[in-house]
Image (cartoon, rainbow, N blue to C red; front, side, top):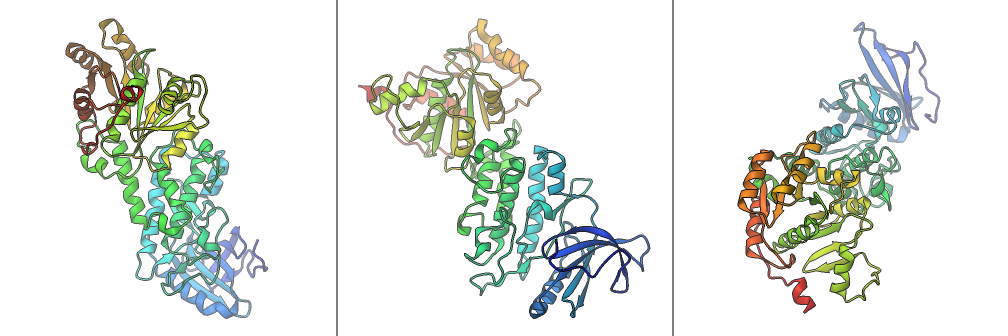
Length: 497
């Protein structure tokens, strides 16, 4: 509630023109009322009443003039300003926006906003932040949070409260007044420096995390990965992590930079078959995911995942190879060989390294989400031949889904059966890998699936070692996506000898 009693009640008239109808909301510093326009019958406005210290009335007047000068479709128009010096009350008259706040929407839908609306919402917020931040005298909003976002019936967004917005003054080291909502305000809003455009971007990251965790978290803390909704686009996670960096210089530096990253990663995710991906994907700065799924036991999924990981690492990319199964044993055996651990004696660390590839054994989905916020350019998921819901979900969401199966005529139904069982999901990104298959088997499966991304994998006894034939196949699989800057590596077999 506002600390001081309001001067307004039902029927009160402000500025000899606006008659108060009802209260719309209240906070610690202000109240907002709906008012009818006595000069324009049927027209309604929102009137915001605030109490200002007389000593800073000049600043308040300057800020009001600044707000009146703003014009953006995602901002309410501020059409009038009144002062009542004896009481310290000031009034802003602005557009009345029909709808509900994002906070109320989240509560009404049990913390759920459809995943397909999250990125469009983020782009709308960024659009208005870019407008504010790039004005001749930049405007810093400073209180981006669900309660200050109004959703219209058409699911369009508008910012509705400029109570603590300020103009950025480059000569200041710190803000005079520290304001913001705990959980959504950037660290520098609590006395460590002056707020600038990057402060609003931190709040955007907090807002996105809030939406992605069903309203449970707005700060990146230990364990938050386990609450991020599984169906969300992967490329959001590293973007949110960067927005929420403690130090402003480690965040995105402008709204435009975030917009470009969101659009670039979205373009990468939605690339259609036959479309050149070189421009979108080569510049993509986030982490990309390759998911390797075997259609049956012994199909070679782990072997293929290792070969792909080392292929990517030889091209100077940082790679994590993740065994997405809490009871799998393959990586534990590899770790015993690499680190010289006695057979059956598990290492205390689930991570080990071979030729620049970071192997993560027996991991969970929460671990994968955490890795997505790190510095890896590629994460390769070894899904084995498990087709439980969690691993299928990771496969379907991957940037590069790889199906590994036998090219034998009597086993081809394993692959076609998987494709049919998941036919409701888009499959244009899928790649099919057939170890030791003949060219005829590849041709036959391409015809059966009506899909041209079917590859025969040659004999490759040590998947960590460079092999010209395997590289030719993977060059085709990843054509136009990665640069070819190869480095000499050595493999498991040599190390064992």
